[in-house]
Structures are given as C-alpha cells and as structure tokens.
Length: 287
Image 1: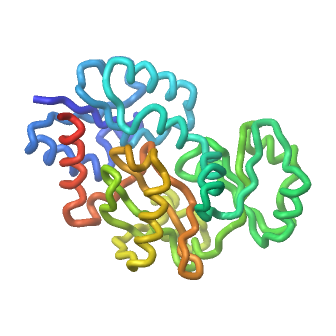
Image 2 (image 1 turned 90 degrees about the vertical axis):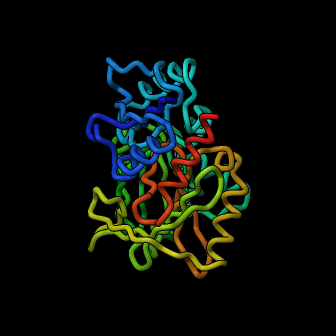
C-alpha cells in the first residue's frame, strides 16, 4: 500500500474538514494517508511515498524553518506542491509578475524589506479612500491592517508594524464587503468548483477564523472563462496538484487578490464530488 502524508500543523493535528474527507477516500483507493505536523521532530517523512502540503497554517510564522524543512524533505520524498512553486507563491511579490502579464490585481505598491514608499507610490495612495497593508509573507490575514484615507501611519511605523520585512500597500476593494470574494478551486490544473466567501459584519477579512463564511458558488460562464484565463497564464498552477484563485468581481471583471498554491482550504465538503476528484488526483501522482 502506498503511503501519503497530509502535512498539517500542531494546532490542527487532525487536519481540516477537507483532510478528514480525504482519509477514507484514499483508503478506498489503496492509499494509506496520515496527518503529520511538519514540525514534529519524531516524524519520519522518508517513510512516505508522497508529502502533500495541506493545513500547515503556521508556515509563515516559521518561514525560514519551513523552507529549510521543505528543502530537506524534498530530497528524500516528493512534495506537492513543488518546492519551487511554494517558494514563488510564498512571497506576495509574485503579484507584480502576474500584473506584468496583463492580469488585473488590486492596485498595489510593493515595498522591499527595510525600504520606503516612493513618491509615485505616495501619490497613488493619496487617491485611495481606504488602504490595506499586509506582509509579503503572510497567511490567514496575519498582520493585515486596514486604514482610512489620511490615516496611513508614517513610513517608520509601517516598517515597525511589518517587522522591517517586505510588505504590500493595496487599495481596499469595497466589493470584498458588498459582494464577497470568489475562490475558484483547481485540481491538477482543471477547474473543480468555486465558493463565495464573505466577511463578518464590520470586518473585511473573509477567513473563517475571523468570522467569515463560505458557500458553494456557481460562477457565470464569463467569470469562469476569466478564471480559466488566469489559470492558463500561470505555469505553476498548471503543474500543481491544487490551486485556489481568490478574486473579486468588479464591474463584471475579475480582480485577482491572491493565488493560493501552498496550503489553501479547498472547501471539498461544499461541492459534490470534489473530495473524490482530489483523491483521484493524488492517486495519479503516485503512479
């Protein structure tokens, strides 16, 4: 029997709901799946045929340790998604590259570690009514702040808030609150299903740990074509076991918020057949 480790973290040793759904489905397909904390010193990762990053939701808090572990583990057993993809996706500066390819993103200023916003950036921000600041390496809205126009802290204070690390300053997209954020889930490069995530009242963060909600969503054909166009433009997505495209619909067009290629919640329980599709994709990767 082939053995697979679904990588999680110490705060969720039994995995998220999606992983719990996968365990019996993989067993039915002749695959023994085990949930393993990536920081567990007793874990023998070499005993598995494949490691799949799933709910390792603390990786951003131990980034150097995580990437070191990933590199070491990858030398003895295949890891999905791939190391190169994880490293690329872990720094939100990848959005610069996608924007240069013609993919619309939320208006963003990218600030390098220890750097300052330039005069052009400041002029751009002056036109925004609300502003979001977030670290370049972050997950689950960690250290993500929202400021009203004119209330953006000084450059020095921003550096302190971001621990002198690289960060993004973005125009707040009000459709996050009025319409919600759409997550398009892709398995083995093919569209599987979508969900609509909404923040709690008086919040802007759609993550469930911040009170957000998620329901199954059927995108219109034009929106799905736009999501597929984004997917086709990103080779890392086409080659990956899974990906989640998070976007806002604005005037009938998708505005990309983020690509999630490391440890996204895939909402397998919300869509009929989604967990089975993911289990089948894992089995294909073992052949």
